Image (cartoon, rainbow, N blue to C red; front, side, top):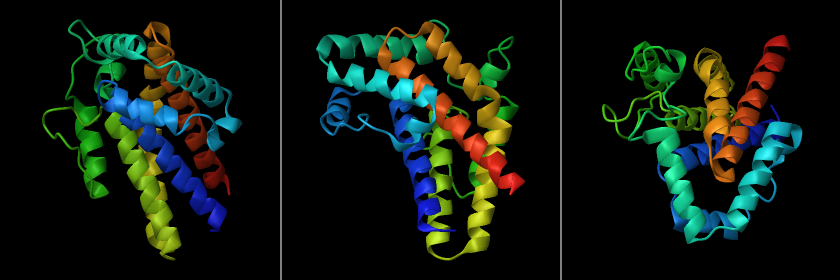
Amino acid sequence: MGVRDVETWERQGSMAALLAALLRSEPCGEWLGQLAADEVFSELPYAQESKDAEAGRALVAGWLAALDEASLAVARSDYMALFVGPAAPLAPPWESVCRHADEALVFQKETLEVRAAFRERGLRVERLHHEPDDHIAYELEFAAAVAGQVAAAWEAGAAEAAAQAEAALRDFCAQHLSRWGFVWADLVLEHARTDLYRGVALLVKGWLRQVLQEACAKDAA
């Protein structure tokens, strides 16, 4: 495992953490303004390898460049309609709801499975029992945390711990994120009114596809 591989895990983790932050709550003007000032979306290394991710990066960068109070208000309205309500969310951010659209209930078996996966890696959601563990933001936060564990283990020379963390992330993506993340992203693309959330949806698709491709390559090695 070389420096480049460690950097790959760190990059995957930081991207998942950024996407989680964009999806965890209503858009915050101060934070988004800082992202714009720092030109965070001017270039994303992993996006260069994915048409979806590059398209998403460009949409978010363009939206941030034109950020003002009016566009922020529209984005907040978009966030509520897509992910919260008061009507049924247009793009439900919970795995259990997306995978059982006919029932549309939270806190189903997927929620408990995700909670167990979090626990196995020593993690738990911030608002346990208030927001379902299988929220898209929490699942991305978990992926970010475990990717960080992989990178830290390799840097410390702990090959066995790194391999266990890698396997945990691959299994989680295969059993959870890959089974609903693309469907969720397509719902966002269908219903979003802003380039902010259209871009985020494309970035999630690109990130997830890259993680799955790398997992397949690892298994084939």
